Image (cartoon, rainbow, N blue to C red; front, side, top):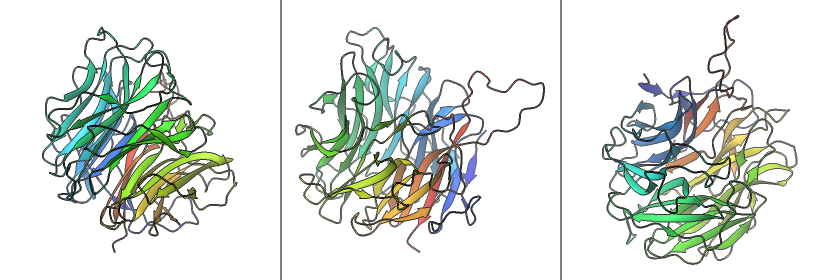
Length: 459
């Protein structure tokens, strides 16, 4: 039984890197051993920054579920939470988490019994849905009953679709007329197209609005290049809400000025290379889906972060807008290794510290492996509005992701010059005893764990 994991300061590296160590960097494995975990989320309680919740999907069995851990000591230790696993569905996943302005924690996830045709999820889809649970004690315990945002509980409903990749966000700005609102966006896979749906809650997650479509242009119906996907949202200090996602070779954005009741027509704002990378050595699927963040101290300056292979190998980029998304800067390369060196940086995530305004990006980084296979986590920080970035080593070792499912995303959160991230790493294979069948031989993928890292720039 998982009880707690203490963060251990990492002063040495198993493989040396030319990058400096992130200040006061610590990392800890927060998932159980002997399983396959991925797609974590992490959030800080604005009412009490000592409280942190991390969530992730997966388990020891083939059928994964939603998991959560919580910390009450600024991430020095984490304890497994209970009450996060739905009892009436075979699978739960695609988890995300957020705190609202009252200090309530929320866990958002999808459920299903089986997938449809591979990558063409609406074809042959069964019962599925999107749900939210609430915790009023910092993530220690969770409401017994989850609230449905959209679901097909029998799988026989007329117009059955497949709801996918939900993500939850909160408006926590004291000056916002919509402070306390919760927002969830996701992909709906249909037989003929993919669209982005949205729902809002104005009562601490107890009820949710009827889902509405916010993607003006529909994507293709297959989970691959040409679909819409990867929605991320951010609320400005005045309550304006911005949402972005990938649509073909463009990052698309829409905005709401009334707390999510209505949205402007979505429009392409940043051109990228295709968001799905099928040729990253050793990784079955990599996505360069974008993130959006807002600097509340700079009159709502917007940032968009993504990764693509415009330089041959995969790099991470940030563009900024000083006029609420009407015009965008040229992309700034976040990773500072030599350009065109054949080393990939991928699965980035971005956040802005709401107190200091510092911009943080973390990503898988292969610069320290001459063969471009092993990776570690690098943290990048900008204190000049995204014009330049300093890179730091964060994770304590290189790991080989060959054959593993790392998930579709990582996640970050920051507050008052302390930054946290959650990511997936593989576990080194142990030699199997002679004359014994390999454990879990039906699933040859390596075991994975969820790691939470912290760094402190305040000291």
